[in-house]
Image 1: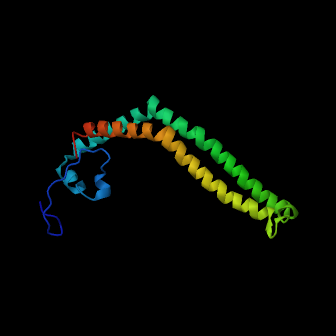
Image 2: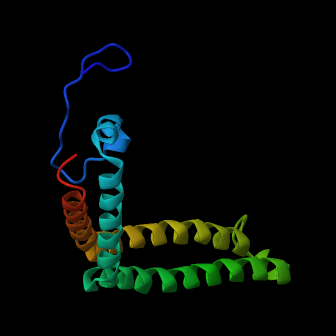
Image 3: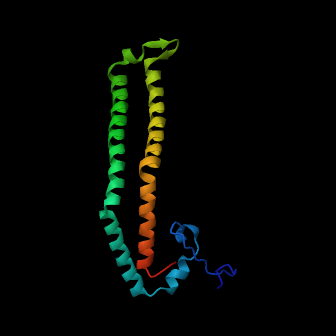
Length: 156
């Protein structure tokens, strides 16, 4: 098979469901050229049904629940901390200007606390995802890829 730049390419087949043909730029034109439009539409409908089934599954709901149980309180807490900083800086400039140590005042410590809390929240989110959601999400993705591959008629 000749490509547009004149080089010969053999068909590449990846059995790994993590392989993304679109991201690599390989194979997409070949798969689209070989597929019959009716079969592609039927495969797309079957894949859509699979995604809806996975979305309704208990495993998917558990992953989403774990995500929400972390993110909602974290967002509320972080926004409350940020808004408190802004409100106090605006309404109590005397308090914010109070020196703590030398040229360092309350406003500087609170501002640095904003940066620190951002990094801590990012670390906590990554840790929570790694320990509580990643494995289950990867298992779901693997299963979904296998099911959609089967619905589309084999490997790409």
